[in-house]
Structures are given as structure tokens and as C-alpha cells.
Image (tube, rainbow, N blue to C red):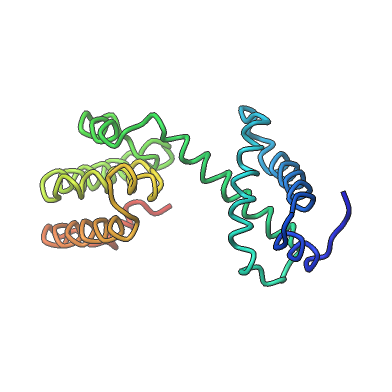
Length: 206
């Protein structure tokens, strides 16, 4: 494998055939992914190849966006790592449905990390629990079922936005709007009960 300048990478990847450049870039991407994801022992060689192949397609489609501010291989490697991490986040939620998350939440099996770490005083934990229970009750009573599903999945469970959008048969922009409306409605309901965002933040402050 020979070293290439940024310009040589671009020229060779834009022309036909591009086999040598693609083959060399694939090898570099696989090596880079193995280093970047070394702490993920469950990943196989096939996983790395899959990430690299998807990255190659994305890189070829984005060649015109490369501005030359770094080495081409550094730019390409960042794309590959982003693709790999996105896929790993998606896999984490593959066998979990939004309905499962909402059921867990309804059954009272959900405990936020801030209440589970045990680092605060008993009094502060009691205040936090009261505020959190109030917020959960407002989510149940004041939001539409679709708003509730989105809020539980994204805000409480941490499911990626794109994954939630796909599961709910919508797109990211519509999901943003749904979450924004839900938050605004919750804020109004909290204010009507004398709860301000500042008071909630103070209760959960370190």
C-alpha cells in the first residue's frame, strides 16, 4: 500500500476504475476501527468489515464535502467511526420496543440514575423523589399517548432520536416537534402547580 496525498486520494476515488484506492482505503478503515473500538470485545472481523464497507459508500458520496483541513484518511476514519457507533447504538435497542419501555415505566420499574446513585442526603433524595413523582404523574395525565411514548423513550430511557422516529413511523423533525410540544405542555402544568424549572434544577444540583 502506497502513501497518497489528499489530492491523490480524491483523484483516484473519483475516477473509474477505483479498485486500488478503494481496497487500500478499506484496509486503513478496518485497522482504524479496530483501534477505535478495541474496548468492544464482542465485535467480530465481519462487523469491522461491515462498518468499513458502509463507510466507503458514505465517503464516496461525500467526496465533494472534503475541505482538506486534515489528512483525507483522518477525515475518512471519522466517518467510519461515526457509522460504527451509530450502528452499535441501534443494536443496543434492537430487541427493545417502545411499548416495553412504557410498560416498564408504568409498572414502576424505572428509577432515574440521579435517584439511584445514593450520593445525596435522605432529605434531598425525598425532595427529588417527590418532584420526580409529580413529573411522572403529569406525563401520565397531561400528555397524549404519542407524546408520552416519545418522552419516555427519548428522555427517560435514552433511546436515540432516529431509532424512536423509525419505531414511531415518523421523521426526526416531526419527533422534535412532538417532544417540544410535550415539554412545553409539561412546563405549563408544572408552573401552574408552583414548580419552576429553576426549583427542579436546584433539587437535583450537586
